[in-house]
Image (tube, rainbow, N blue to C red):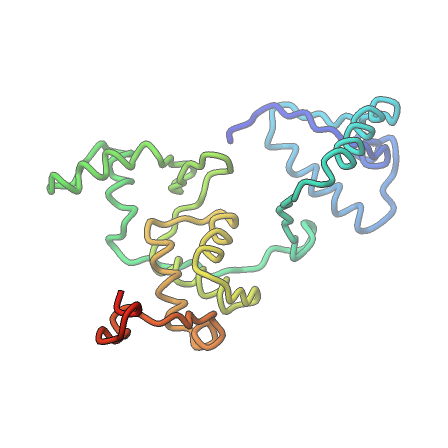
Length: 233
């Protein structure tokens, strides 16, 4: 987001004093967290970590408890992000995915970078209408979101890998195509044919077809027409 000046708040006195140098960090795990924080701070022109005293946190704590008691009869939906590993662990080496050329992102990238439109008038009109919804940062195409962070635009090869991981991978989310598509968007990925690709993969999945709810209602074309009154209507 190109933030240059940042002020962070914490209610832990231990963390703030270890960062300022007033306290030592004898714990090996805390030393790794402190080292990681010091490496991230270098990226900002100004960074400040302020501790919120307990006396100033009483009103916020009381307000949160009051809200939990007052609106307890409402149905709540809380999104929980599960962190699979610690931030101090070493990053996994992931092989890059070579996308096919051209793909759906190429016309949008050419229009945003060089103001170049396709030769076909209809396709050029679509690119011009869709381009304002995208932005390029660090040579990566992102799609803007209404209520959330920007989503990483991926090609068709990487998109198929993402759908397969959510549907058949470690998540094993054998749900409807709308649920899986929403899960992928919450993970921060986007491509135009998201819903269609997920629906096609679910149609090819034997487990989803075997355990999917079946409609027992008879079809209209299978009902005999030569029935006595009042069934002929």
